[in-house]
Amino acid sequence: MLQLYYASGSLCSQKVKLVLAEKNLDWKHYPINLLTFENLQPSYFRLNSKGVVPTLIHDGKVITNSAVIVRYLDEQFPNYKLTPAEPALLERMDRWIDLLDQFPMLEVMYGNFRGIEGFVLRRSVQIKERMLPQLIQANPELKEQYAAKLKAIKQLNSTIRNVKEIEGINQKIEPLLDQLEVQLSQTDWLCGTNYSLADTLWTAVLNRLDESGFGLLWEDNTRPALGAYLNRLKIRTSFKKAIQDDKMPLPMLLAGLRKILLGI
Ligand SMILES: N[C@@H](CCC(=O)N[C@@H](CS)C(=O)NCC(=O)O)C(=O)O
Image (cartoon, rainbow, N blue to C red):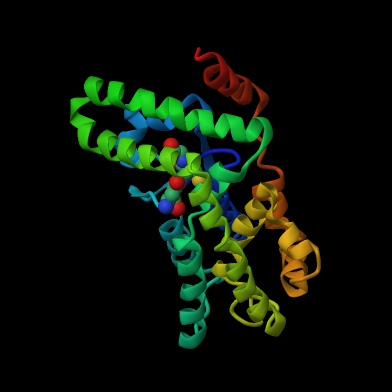
């Protein structure tokens, strides 16, 4: 049985859920509430030393990175292969996935989300920065892992407060979209005629860019092939299952808002 620790609305969880849906695999749900910081609990840190979602458990193996998880799933469940067999196409798929992995999506999201959502995200980073030193004190056996998390959170907090840095990161989005536009003007999918893991992962990222207010960069018709591509991705059943239906249950949301806004 596949067991997935995931968080509703988390981009990295959505990538894995999309692949599970594409392959029509059953899996056991372990929802983690990022708003109440369940991911910082010692029990979760023992499973995932970075305290992030997703985490997949299968056949006694624990896998903690979405890019590794999706490749693992494609190898283990070859019923519907999402990896091209031809070496040149495989290389192309790897290039698209690397490009996406190197892109600072976390900073784009935390730096650009507006309204209550943006407020909650940014406040959650500040709270984590306060919680982690206490967790280091209380859990000496996890000191190194928590210290690494604190360092990463401090870095994120400093970046998202720096308007100039966020502007610089935002400026990298259009060249990335241009590369997609060139490819998608030639082929339906990123690796040619067949849908692949690269398309699955880009579904989550493009959708998140859209939610962060960057949809105008293709909706204004300057990148028509990209706009049409996202429409093709959105009509897949996997999009409905993994993204549209990915709503946080109300009790979890309320517990999260209480924690973030009132500190209880
Ligand atoms: N490289 C990791 C990144 C995982 C990651 O950053 N997950 C985010 C959600 S998309 C998370 O758990 N954030 C909570 C936190 O860092 O405290 C992956 O792709 O799995």
